[in-house]
Length: 265
Image (cartoon, rainbow, N blue to C red; front, side, top):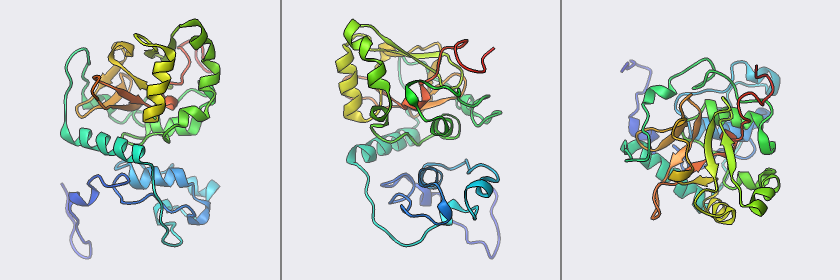
């Protein structure tokens, strides 16, 4: 690993150890300068070690290229206990290199190697289901390994409204990769719709169990990161007393089946 001479002041890796909010103690300030996007800043500053804002993005959105230096004044902020615990567990698991037994299908880190579009070959589909935000989905799916959509984000979409018929019929919902359109999860399976939604509400994100995972297209990396075989970041495996629980971003599984989305040939 390269080191640099004066005037550079070298630091230790421990500076970036998991803290209360990613690699920092607090979120970014709420009133950043130069009209910088707060959510993007928080992801890049605090839940990221490799990726950057888009090249030249400041030309269209701001008068400065430095999102993480766009501070105005010290402010206090807080995040929910559920968010802190989830992020702590995800960070701990990633650092532990933990592996999981059957029926989990473990994957190699090479799945997430840089490709044509972040960790994937293509951007997310342009017509995601449930009114999911396309830009947010693309950042979390393809340029991110740790950060998640906001807790309870799935409740702000049309997901519950559009799946009401599943509750009434006792059927299942198929969740497809937001990039490739491959089937990733089917739920509820082995439980009721209400049980699936109750657990997801409790934890803040759609939560799947082993029987609801399509292991042809889903892999778990050492440490628990849950990804698709094509390099889409999905979330994390955070086991509890009932077994494996896959805490998944709705924006990452809001795709349409291959052959049924715009631009597909």
